[in-house]
Amino acid sequence: GDSVTQMEGPVTLSEEAFLTINCTYTATGYPSLFWYVQYPGEGLQLLLKATKADDKGSNKGFEATYRKETTSFHLEKGSVQVSDSAVYFCALSPGANSKLTFGKGITLSVRP
Amino acid sequence: NAGVMQNPRHLVRRRGQEARLRCSPMKGHSHVYWYRQLPEEGLKFMVYLQKENIIDESGMPKERFSAEFPKEGPSILRIQQVVRGDSAAYFCASSPGRRGRDSYNEQFFGPGTRLTVL
Image (cartoon, rainbow over all chains, first blue to last red; front, side, top):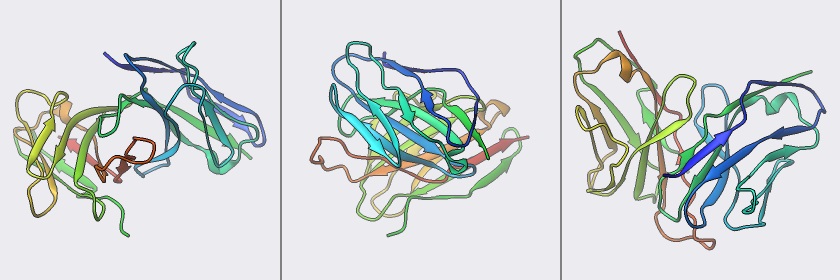
């Protein structure tokens, strides 16, 4: 079945540092890929998405590129802020109106 | 436009009691998904419903768990005879259901219900 693997955490960075969070997936066909963010005590919010190979999703300075050849969707940001401290989940969906399969999530803490 | 609402936000039950979790989707959304988040784990899909229909329940435990989304009112996730292993955060998400321009319907998540079983 479908699965998503995220790098182990937690991750602690200083403000303005470069961020990379790795995500790889296993799926049949051509899934859509997502990054969700969860702030303390809140539900998940969609951060960015990509629906086909080589698409780049971007939002709030975060980027991720759908790499079919490496089955990856790594999240990057050039300069993190304290307000980026949250839990980040990589996820996939096989198609419209389908369930999401999530990775375990990784906690990011950004120090001032 | 109000977001997805879930209540209660926190629920404490003793072993053997019943837990009822409610989810009101965003206005205009006819599709609801339930996910469970165990400690230190990602979210796991449980069930996908449209109004009055269960579309996919492949993630639901075979016993004690049930879900409904009636024509009127919120979606309900019901857990009978709760056990300590049911302690988790339960998230509901809704989507409009119609196919979007990029063929994906974003799921909007509620704040979750945190169930604690004593």
